[in-house]
Length: 123
Image 1 (cartoon, rainbow, N blue to C red):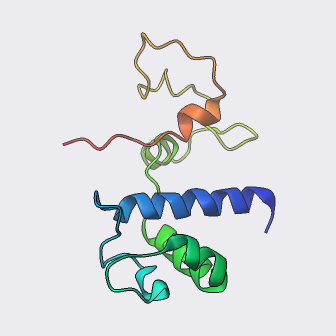
Image 2: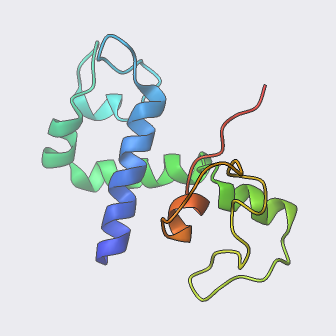
């Protein structure tokens, strides 16, 4: 694994935990890591990561594959699959010009920040 893959894994681990997180600081029984901890009422993610990484990694990767992140980039590419991309894999158009960022917002961040932002769910 290279550095980017490791960082991506931890981000996906965090996203998975946030998905299953319960206000009482205990994950619900649906959490795939619950089977690792051996506890009935909570998941000890730190224990799982330290003691059983060979079990945690495939679980997180599988969950990530089944629950892809919904970013502006994903949304844009679904709508415009043939859009030209730059050398880093982002559209040549700015997210702001494509309607993802309000016109009044001033941005000096790299395009990756805008394109990798989660799309807010619409009701």
